[in-house]
Length: 68
Image (cartoon, rainbow, N blue to C red):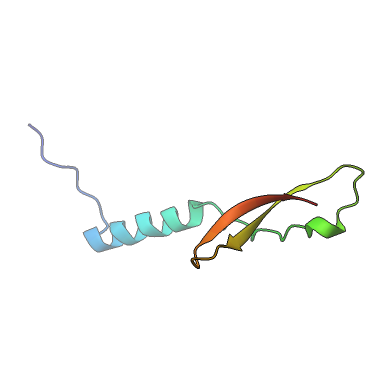
């Protein structure tokens, strides 16, 4: 079995080089999500389905579909 290859750089220098290369090659940060238009501002000739949170008599909140 042959000995491991020797390099001129020390182990910490090799680690720094790999870390820096990985940081440079990483994908750019994703763009921030855009706010949707309010359901009331969308002009349409057909009704739109919208979800709202409704609180019942016992104080629990549940989603409910509404046509606007």
